[in-house]
Length: 142
View 1: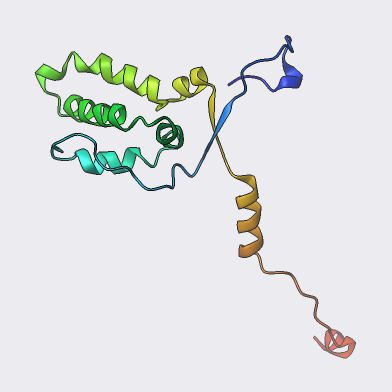
View 2 (view 1 turned 45 degrees about the vertical axis):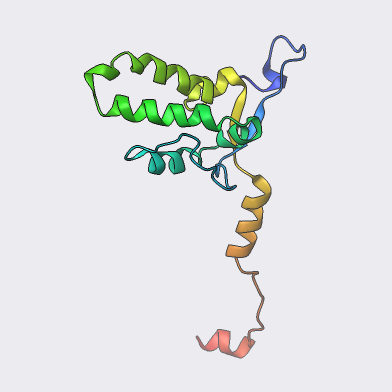
């Protein structure tokens, strides 16, 4: 994780970090772009599209690349002997899609919490404290 600007030795301009929502992508999940969906692919497709990086995938129209990643990933997880060569490819796809912490750092993407939404949720969850009048006579009796 890069140091904050005030702690860096070199203060020259750098490429800013792209902030991704901690809640993940909340838009409509794209249709499966390949002709045939093999067993498990649609479930994995729906799961992967809720990742924070999916916000950028959608903007960059990477549906086909993400679909190939899903297909290759499931082949590797099935532990097919023919999929042994795919393991390296899946790792590279994960890096390019920003699906691991190291890849996020290299791509200069960071997952951040929406502070405004958190404050809004805190205000909704915590009812306003109200003062109530107390009879001084009751307080002494108790």
